[in-house]
Image (cartoon, rainbow, N blue to C red; front, top):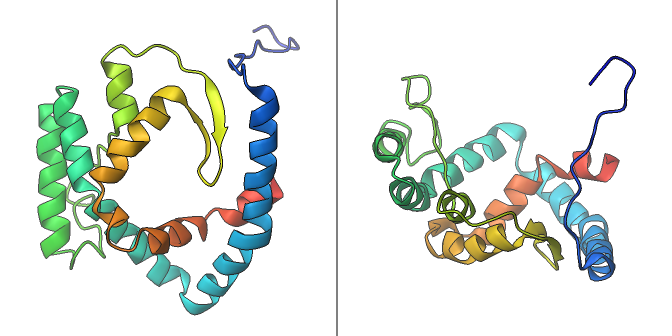
Length: 176
């Protein structure tokens, strides 16, 4: 754009705007009146250092999904890097609490089923809001189910890891 011009914006396909707005209101209230108080107690109990380590562990445990999706997208080198990261962080990094793989030059390449569906040619999806989950689109929501199946944190304290993730972002969300 030229200096002083207002840039074009991308419109979002939202055929269900009315229901999306009501579900957003529900999710927003849930965040403010339920999740924020839970998160405040959680942050009081667990200092930032521990919450950071729990986040490292969660990302390490998500390896099976990252591996499968890298393979399904034909990203074989990244699948190997993700596997090496998992082995290094699970051993030297003490069950993934410490991310020692990144300083060793093994950058993360997390992929999910929504990205895999996009790589396979799934077109631009419609936006919609899902109660308890939040904003998504058809492609990513379709990928959400297999993502949960292949994510061990679903079975190993999924709510704990959700609260831990939220503890880093709830204040930003509330300010927004």
